[in-house]
View 1: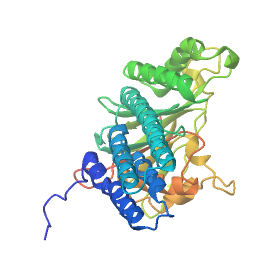
View 2: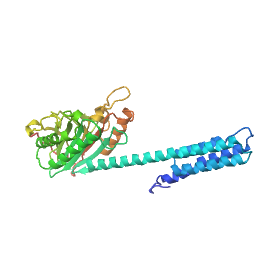
View 3: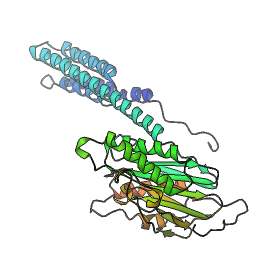
Length: 380
């Protein structure tokens, strides 16, 4: 029995390649023997080209060249066993040329693979710099996050989230930049930097929202192409969860309301009064332009923040993803398990590919030490 022992990990890539090398080598031996034993009017030597072609599918140019050289040698051996004719010479030269072509394409594939790996490394580095990993716990809160990029091989796009702990509780933000690509990433970085700088300077969510709008409006034009001037903006939802008040406070700047999950498959959509998105006005916003909405948030509740890419995902029939209905069945799940189930279900609904970036943040209010639910306060 292996219970309690670590399971053996996957074999290294080089070991798997050398194990697969048995296939083309076996083909060379089988084809050569079959050709030597076959009648004089049957020529199986041209099939030797299969060996380097197969090797190219799993190995690099060196192993492909080695297999091709062995195939050429086998062809020469076959020709030596009979009267060497011009047909034998043509077969030998043709096999050598085809092997060279196979090695050349293997070189191109290896180069493309290195370039792709560099792109992935840059993308992962950008994700670590922009989207700092959320801590597993923020005071009495358990958190988890998920990012699904619509662009192939991308790790990050125009959606964003952040969480900051202060003396009285936690503040979080989730946002969605209009558009995709590098411009969207730059705008997301702009808002994230502004949030991390201003979150400690403003005591209320409206004051924080006004500060963020001024920062975004000041710099957004520098990141927007001339063809899209005046069309860039960022929707955002600011969230404040005090440690001891049993409420969640929210200020929406054009962003959809979160889902409030409660035990026994209960899903509530808080009634918000959204203000315009960041960057869409004159850049002279004041705290009076924003509204704070409150909802009870106590032990056992989960707040699920998301971006448009989740609810706007379509299936093959064109139907939107029924987000609230699906997550109701997982309302008792912990944040990590909840997002894992949403991710799997969302990708199944969308056929494995999303049309827009999608970000989710789950915040679970863990029970207090004495097991009681914190007393909710009235709105200020």
